[in-house]
Length: 433
Image 1 (cartoon, rainbow, N blue to C red):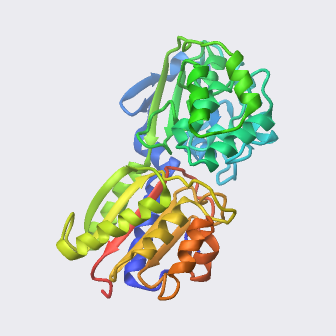
Image 2 (cartoon, rainbow, N blue to C red):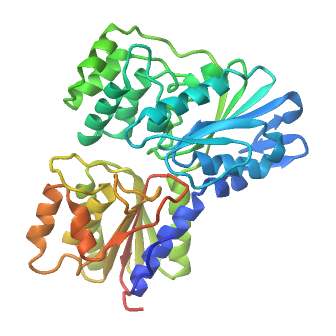
Image 3 (spheres, one colour):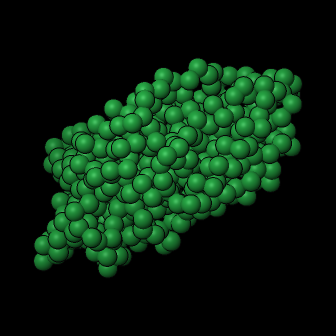
C-alpha cells in the first residue's frame, strides 16, 4: 500500500498504524462486519430485510469508494443483485453486476453530470417491488453532480472551488451543493420512490451525519436558499449565477419518504484499528479527538505542543505512547503552491517537533488535496537548522509538497478504495527500540 518501507522503528510503527486504519475502513471489510445474508433475510446493523418481498435489487450511488462498496455488496448478495450504477473517480474494484462510471473530484465535471443522470435514470426504473441499496461514500458530492434546472455546471464548478479555497468545512460546502442539486438532499431517494431505499454509507465527515455524507442523496432534506446564501456571504464567495438562482428559488420542505441509512464505516473504525496496533507494540494509545477541524497548520502546531507536553510532564499520556486523531482539517488558500491539508499539518508539526517524536498523517483515500501523496511523515530532523524560514515560507505559499518531497517525507499509497477522512499518528518515546 505505501510506496516505501520506513527506515526506523518509530516510523515503521507510525506507518503500521496508518495501514491498519485504512484497511479497517475498507468498504468490503465494513460490509463483512455489518452485513450478512441468512436464507432470504438480509441483516444490516441489526435491521432485517426480507428479500422474498422484492422482485429486484438495485445498487445505486457514488463516491470515491462506491465501486468497492458495490463489490462488497456483491460478495454478500451475489446474483440476487440484478443491476446498478455507481460513480467513482478512480476505479479500484470491478463489480460484475453493477456498472461503474467515473466523474471529476474534487471539482465536478461533465462526466460527473452524465454519470449522475445515469444513476437517476436507473433509480426511476424502480417500483415498490424493488429494493434499492444506495452505496454512498465521501466524494459523492462532486461525483454525483445533477445541477438544478437553470444552473450551469460551470457555475457549480466555480462555487465549489471558491468555497474549498476559502477553507470552508465540508458541511458548509455541502449546504450550497444540496440547494443547487436534483440528486442531493434526498434526490436519489425521491427518484427511486416508491421503492424502499437502504443507504449503505461510508462516512468522510466529522460526526458521521448521513445528511452531510456526499450531501445526503438518501436523506430527504428541506431546501432553504437563505441558508445557502448565508454560507456564500460568510466566506466572501463571488458567485453571481448561484446567488441569482438562490435568490429566485423558493423554500422547499423535505419530501416525505421512508429511508433506512446505515453508516457502516467511518474514521472511528480507522482509529480503533490504529489503537490496536499501538497496544500490540506496547505503546499506550491516547485518542485526542475524532473531530479535529479547522486550519491544518494550526492543528499541526497543536499536535506538536501536545507531544511536547507529554514528553515533559506525562500529560495527557506518559511515553512510550501513540497520540491519535481524526477529522478533517482545511486549508485557506492564500498562495499558489502545491499541497494539501495533511501535508500542511505534517510540515507545521515538523516545525515544532521535539526529539523522540514522529508525526504522520494521511487522507485515507490516498490523495491529499489534489496531490499524488496520501500524506507525510516527519520528525524533529525533517525541518533542520536553517530550514525553519523555508518551511514557514512553504506554509505561507501553500507549497508544502515540494518542501516535504525534497526531504523524502511524502507518503504515497495510490487510491486506497476507502475514504474516511484524515488519520493522524504521533509516536512518543522509545524511538530507538
